[in-house]
Image (cartoon, rainbow, N blue to C red; front, side, top):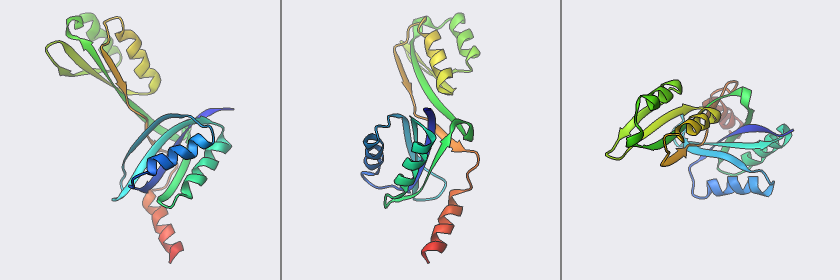
Length: 174
């Protein structure tokens, strides 16, 4: 059965790393639902958060194969219940549609206006994909000029700190 899995990959920040990770997935015919990359809590190490749909065995196999990349320190595959995750979305709506009705929709969805220009407003919403798309459906009644959604930002619940894994690797390598 196919479910969503969040792959957390911790690596050096090197040119071509993203390409190698995505190539590994495409060779196995696994589509990427979302991907984000940023620095993590350990200086010099970057975290790739990749959401894929596949079965549990394949997700774990992919994580092990990603760890074989020279620059990868550690990779994990987590199911949805093992992670806390959010996405962010921005919606551009025409200024002429700003009304009490729109304000009610924004309050209902805990969204806020983050920028006002002469002809449009930009609305921000943080949450799960379903929440972001639900707001998008409602905002279409007011006219949506533009929509952008980030990839998933996630943290796993059961994982010990990355620094502990790095310390273990250092002991093992000495």
